[in-house]
Length: 418
Length: 173
Figure 1 (cartoon, chains in turn yellow, cyan):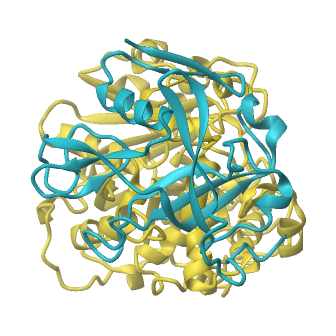
Figure 2 (cartoon, rainbow over the protein chains, first blue to last red):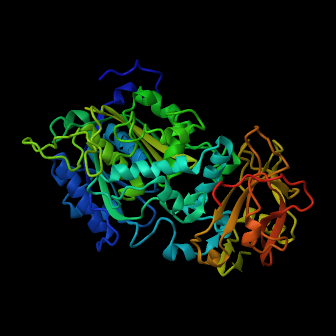
Figure 3 (cartoon, rainbow over the protein chains, first blue to last red):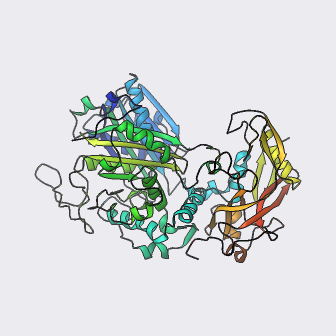
């Protein structure tokens, strides 16, 4: 594939395309899994190994992230019959996926292990709800948290909304533009047999749903689900022997942040998000720019989070995110579809993993939609994106994932078809 | 001494090692708003920290700051998550630019102090008051008393100030 001339880079150029995602796997996306996070995690890990065409015992490195709502690698490894040369369980939520893939490359480059499985296992609906509903909502408030939780300022939507509101004020962003993020992702989900919500929604549906935390309506917020997801990363030269066309990793930015992480609203324009800083690492590392990207996976914990990131990573001018997400560009069949799985708004909530998994399958040209199977065991894609139809992006070569933790922190990754 | 308190049925606490927060809230309990002022670069900061975010100096002096400002952004919570707030919806979380030090150290910064919209007595504002406040509303500090040595700074409409004709509010009421 043609790529623009190399720019100045901070990652050594020889790491571009040196590592690849070779296997992806997930459980079903449900509410009420009736399984522990340990059982969910090992299910996803076995699926990812089978997808890569390797034995689970070939996995010798393991990474995971959670917020004390999951099972650590120490319990997963034995359950999939492997012995690890490296493992680490990190604290974190959104933005961890891309950052931990960067860590996986680092530890393999340092010679600690050869094949890393990254997993996120969560009963995000039936056990620990991210929004803080349930037992978490009534926990005592102490110390630094007095400056937020004591004001009923706790859940993700509550913590992010001042950014969203200020963006509307400064740039004239309209509710019906933002709602288009949900509309478009729901169209994509209707072509995704795995999606928890497959129904197509309209702008009126979004604006007519009840207000949760103004400016957020219920349908501006993502779904909460129970699921586990897994991604297997190894060197590209080893990937050649595996089942699928590898998704080569071009460049990563990890948990790149705005100043004043103790309360980021103190610094800079508050309608700016972490991607403003991450873009200056991502694009030079990857040697490509926004114009080269065929599909994006912009984290959609909320409709606004996709829009703000697309803006600050440079897919449109600052302030024009509302136009961008309502222009048709982000739709299947558009110039640069976003979250073709339906993302967190519709497919299921996985803290970012499913958007990377989706782009890996897109780059294989083997997305799991309802198109008919061919004699080679691969789907014969029709590129007819009507409801219940195709989800494969035609001739896709390069993708960008834009992971979001909160307005101040983002991670990102560019992949290309191997 | 560590501090414990009960606010709207919610348990609040500050550890005895947490000198910065103990001092901050002790001033609030006297309804006297203080922030740390850096001894080296002279800039104020919020919320309390152990070093200056602008110059990294660990030396600071608690300094009285006028509690007046303008709403920079807001949200209106209709679906409360914490049990303490369920009876008080819709409630407003305000991010207020203090007049003091606005536009420093760069034009994009201000001391942006969080609080709920309350009445002058520190009680959460009723729905009819919430509907009148938006970006640009002039506000002044009020305090919700929680325990000896612990009051929460809050924001109430500054009735003495010149208010914008219509503060900016989310277009869908």
